[in-house]
Length: 183
Image 1 (tube, rainbow, N blue to C red):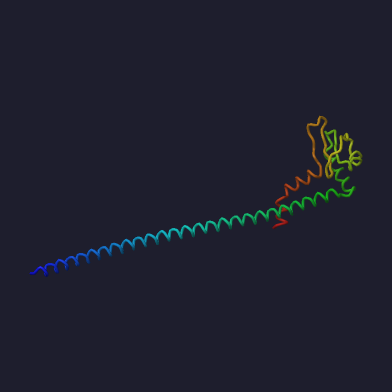
Image 2: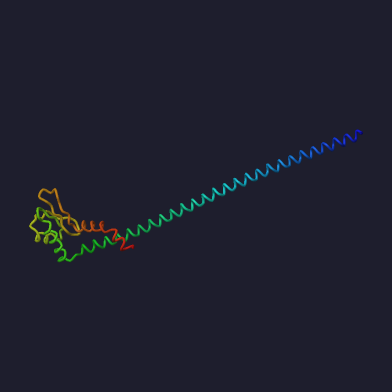
């Protein structure tokens, strides 16, 4: 075997070894690239899922906020209607005919003057109240009508002002009025 043959054989073995190493390297590089691409796809998928969840959360938050605002507006509108009904009631009471007002005052006084000594009313009703009772007229009060009746020492009083009666009736029947108005 000649030197040329040995050189050729060494070259062939070197080339075969280089091809084998190159092939293994290529396989390893391909595997690394595939792993990196797989990892990048997982990261991308996780990020997209996270973004989708965040978008859904923001949508729900905005929807809840909008619903709350609508409910608040509805409640405010309903409160305005109830306030208007209350004001209309006060207006109606303040315009009672004198005859009707005196009849109501007479019923209130007759039923509650026993064991009491003082009575208060609005200025407009002063003469009628004095005529309807033997209680001492103690003064005028600012109200829609009605009376306050007090005992001798001022420790107890009965509040029959129309304002107070309207307020009590309004509070007790608020749900009924609400159901009638808004079903």
